[in-house]
Length: 106
Picture 1 (cartoon, rainbow, N blue to C red):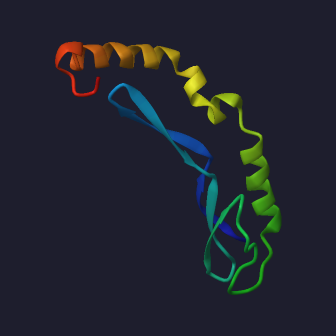
Picture 2: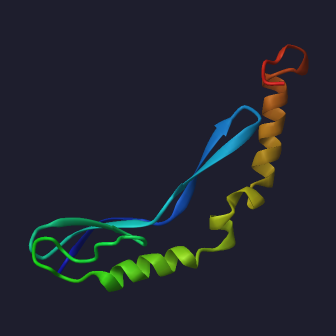
């Protein structure tokens, strides 16, 4: 039986910058150890779905990763729509950190 080493769900990382945010997308992926001892990493877009060592087929697993990525909640796909309080807090922080009269960001 294969053993899952790491499973990462699809998500955005948010990076705060002056006067805004940058959202970095990370697709879902799964790292597992095959019965033959080979370590494999799959994502929803993996072209190779078999083990190099023994030929075990992981096509259904790749399909499941792809399906889950296609059916994420709207909050996960568009986090900027649901981040209104944080955006308001960021605006206040930016205004106090970079006053209009002496800011290179304006």
